Every structure is written in structure tokens, then in C-alpha cells.
Length: 221
Image (cartoon, rainbow, N blue to C red):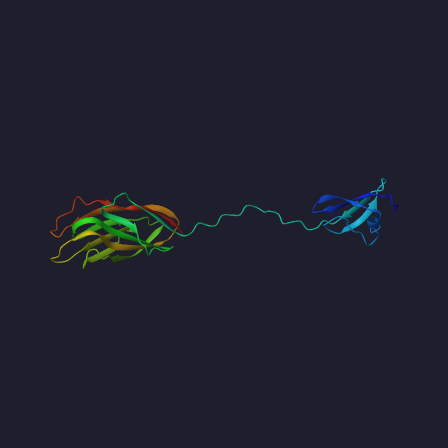
């Protein structure tokens, strides 16, 4: 090739065109079987030709481009567990989530708050059996020496009786009456509610001014 030749080498690089100057010396590299994409950082050309203006046209294989960004990353699935929202009551009989609650087991505490001379309680507790299954009940420590019964009948309602026996003073203050254990069965939400509830003092008189407050729960299973 002539020394006056200043060509333009056009190579395919990463799907686009890159223009690089070619000198007499570099143009001599364009020999059959030894084509080079001079001035390129991409792939190796496979053929070359010269047009009527003396420009060298190189057709090459582009170097590997970076990987595409791909689609948006899907968010992780929500974590299993429970979200319990207690009712608005702060005195009387209330429900609270127990500290032993795990990702699949829900512990519900039935608590007495700021009570005076509480001897026994009886109530029906309805729960959302579309997302929970009742498994067991355990007496708490607030009513010392109390006897307890807890049975589910019908499904979705736990009937509870908890009382001291014999001649004994009622309990005053705050503490855990009993705990109820549930297992998660599905994702969803629902409400707890008391019915047929009563509380008595050590004289067997009804504590009619005692308030009862339940709550709601959300389950991710």
C-alpha cells in the first residue's frame, strides 16, 4: 500500500462501530490470514477490503460485551410469623402476645391487670380458626393453686374455667392467668373475642366492673 494512504479501519466492536486511524505500517498488517483490528480493544476481524477512496474496511467479530442488566429483582417472600394487636383496654382482663412465640407457634397470654381480690374467671374465647389451630393451655402463676380447664368446642372457640379452690384470698395486682398455644395453618388475619365471660372474688361475688379486652392477629405462614 502507498505511504500516502491514511485509511479508516472500521471494526465491529460490541455491536457498534469503532473508527481508528491506519498508517502505512499498520495497514501492511492487513494481509490474508493475518488481519488485525488495529486501534481496537475488541474482537478479531474475519475479512477486509479497500474501497475506491483508499479506505480499509475491516469486518470483525465484536468482543464480548458486558452482561445485560436483566429484569427487576423479585422481592424476597415475607417472613413467617405473627403480628398481634391487643385491644385498647389496659386494666381488667387483656390479651398479650407471649415471649415464647416463634415463627409458627403463637403464644397468647390471658392477663389480669390492676385487679383486686380476683378469685376465678370463666369465659369463651373465639379465635380465627381459618389461620390458627388451638393446641394447648397452661395455667399461669397469678392465681396461685388454681384449677383450670380449657377445651375447644366448637372449633374456633376455647371454653376456659380458672379458679382457686377452698377458703383462700383472691389475687390483687397484675399477672398471667393462663397461656393458650396456637399453631399457624395459613396466611391471613382475624380477631379474638370474649363471650360469656365472668370473674368472681373470694366471696363468690361477680366483679361486674371488670373490663375485658381481646385483640386481632395477622399470620404469615
